[in-house]
Length: 397
Image (cartoon, rainbow, N blue to C red; front, top):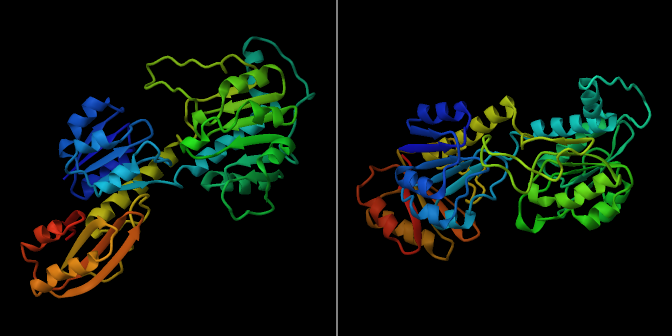
């Protein structure tokens, strides 16, 4: 079987797939749709990062594809419904680079409050301007976190340990860590000395922070966005940086980002004082990329070897028990009544004893695991595939 890995996925993932017996093809970038479609014909596994978009057209050219690994946090670049309809399990790494993003956010807060970049640039030009006026510690400052997920909550804990007063806003009910408090968005914007955005990439978050939100922020606020580029109206941000309402900003993501390092970058935020611009590198540390590579590859290898769907973002979750049997089948089907009875009938008609069975559902998908302790007859798999409303069936081992 073949794993196709795009966008410079960490070598640890390559080693994991090869150790599991997969042939591995690597591409250092995200190919165009036509090229990708040509490459997908014999791929059983596809590994991508954030730039490669997977929709129905691409999936239609991949008859063997059984699993997709998003070697990053988000999966908005993948049509999860289309994958589910074709029985393709999708895995990501929701925690592996959170520490890297949090450390960068904290470092940027400190540098912005101390004007480190501006001081450094003046010294490079030969100007020695030593002063304490207008520069502050982060201790005692009010931090407003928009999005209290994996990154936001970890940032909350570390910021509080540095002496910050933490408030947050999230659309869902979340457990507040430490002394953090939840606020309505408008109140959070008006009370915070520093505001940092850590929301996901759903379309409803487009321009979530715009003119109205910037106008509601207190004078002299510091603003960070290390989430998704389209979440923030950068034109509005630039206006408020110029008029002084926003004291400084750190932006790691942009509405339009170059396809490669060879393409030029342009933004209205360029050449503004006390603004840190970074090329979408919040999670780009060697530690984070190694963790992501190991985590996602391990989950996909386990899916093929045991049927495990732990950490899948679109499949029912199946956690294998310790005991194993001579053979295991996996049956992916539409979530409708009577499917388990039809599956059992296939084995009963062949007088094959089912030693263990597990069924989980998630939305429109049902996922059944069938363990047998009898010899595996050649026609069972084809009969499982022939059951009406079957999406895919396979012999796990």
